[in-house]
Image (cartoon, rainbow, N blue to C red):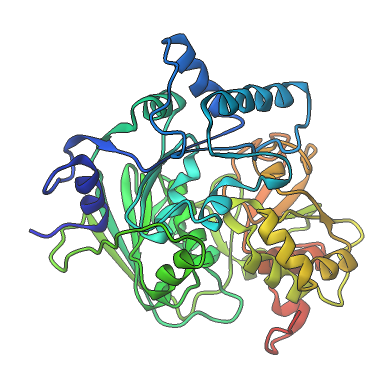
Length: 428
């Protein structure tokens, strides 16, 4: 019997010839991640157990991204605590201030995540890195403390579900629409503790940035990990960022899957996940009667360069609706700089957008865009549960940057064609 990509990576890191779903293994990790919310909890566990040494200071990444710059004394104290830990242990990959970006965009950008790696992070969206052919998953801070100390984690080998996408996407339909459509089909617990393996010609035609969005939201279906087989795009992306070695893994033709879904998405329109769940998915055309108060374009899901570019294509020469605040947050300094150099930031500013520093910000209801009671927002982030971005009565509608930008102009949920027409997208 053959094996999946995930099973092969786990087996290699567990020192085993092969593993099977349900096996319990101890596996060596290549990278351990924590942020300004979760790292303090892990550090406290280490201190409580008298552990005064990390397994490898070059294989730990501490990214101060959730409340950057610190929004209050408590947030600043959290960052200070982590910074002192990083200094004490010589943590090489500590990011704060002008070097910080949203962790799940920053680490691939820095070349710290590569195909074949096993990555664990104290953040549920650590599954993002599967887009590069790695096995990456989120864990609690206690498990992360153990990984920081020993370089190992225990894993129950998950089953894998395969999702195959056929056809050719319509203009304005993006990977965000694909993953929302998928979650709408299987539900928020449809992949519970399973790997979601994405395949098909539609996936292969996506850019690496777009693939990162797909893998990022595997957790919104309950997935343990999302993963995409590496190809020439993956290899080029990684080699442009690092000279470090990596290994490519592929699923065997006779690999066994928990289930296989196959869809022709040629007729898929942009979609919107309505409150209060990512699986409450409807076509954008079913949603155009919903007025809004805020648009947020950013987050680890859709704050990358391509996301800002597509938003600027729609907003060029337009104005944000006078009763809407449109907040745009580049995911990393690298994204911000490129968008600035190419005139994207200028286009967004001219349209009336607010540009924020590289932070998670409003995505988790942290700061820089909190919703008041009853307000409605279109967000390119990943969750829309009650209270996620502010008051529990506020409503969050999840969508792609294209839909978000169009909605910002019209003051209601909108299809991009309503703003730019049906002609080909303009050049920024």
